[in-house]
Length: 118
Image 1 (tube, helix red, strand yellow):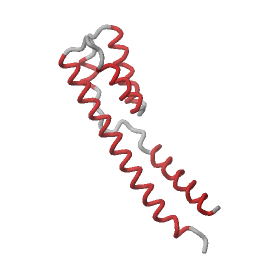
Image 2 (image 1 turned 180 degrees about the horizontal axis):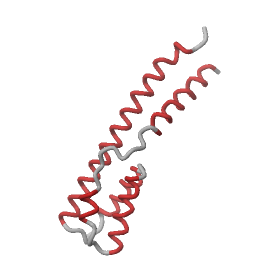
Image 3 (image 1 turned 180 degrees about the vertical axis):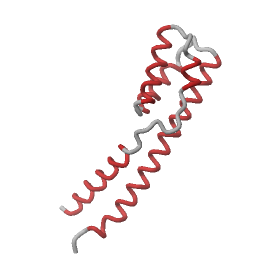
Image 4 (image 1 turned 90 degrees about the vertical axis):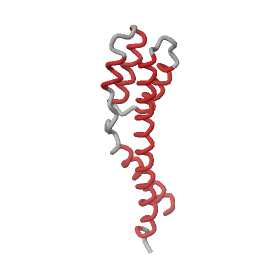
């Protein structure tokens, strides 16, 4: 029973840590937006979805939409490069957030035995 409480506490700490990571945190969409400003309507709609997802911290949604956009055959070389660059930025942000959360969860689990009643 006590172990279950600790597991729930660790999950709660992990959830709180992840909710603290909901910021744009270094993803610059200005060049991306500029590159797709004059694109055809369907491509522009997809690009807008990417920007909206990033600004709302929906990084998995942004990555999925970036993959969809990257598969479009009508993109220019510049647009393809901007997609690659933005994908790299978002993936790095996700990896950094995951590392931070894992570290905080590890500390919570490490401190767990001290909080148990004796």
